Length: 161
Image 1 (tube, rainbow, N blue to C red):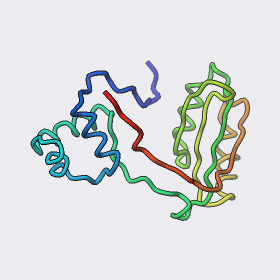
Image 2: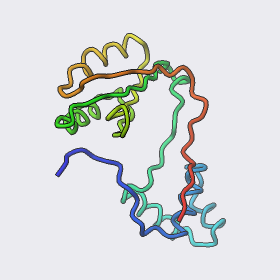
Image 3: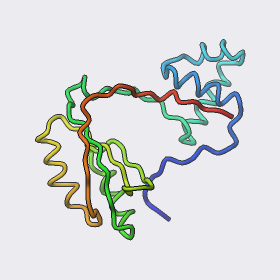
Image 4: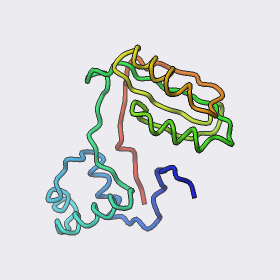
């Protein structure tokens, strides 16, 4: 069994009410259970129980999303990484353990992995690349793109039943 924690696919047991609750929380994660219950014509307890179940099953996560350029972290870099596939799990585990790494995803196509690294400066980015990422056994090559501006960052993508 793999020791890497993956974002799992949602089971097909979600119903229309689950999707309606998710839709409202995707629009504004601070929406109160009372407001959701009034909009949907259900009890606050039902909303609370449904949200708790969605959180426990890791179908839903409620977080504050930050624009790194407005919080003193002006260095956002996306890496495309080619990996020796027999070392893939080890590479993923080591990347996930680097605090500056904010996103790791497996992919098809040119790269095996895409990784987002957020640092407070180019000097810190260089330290992460030199002292951490380049030391990982199994990485064949890395290409990077320095992100200059974020024009759209949304998490209210459509959920449907």
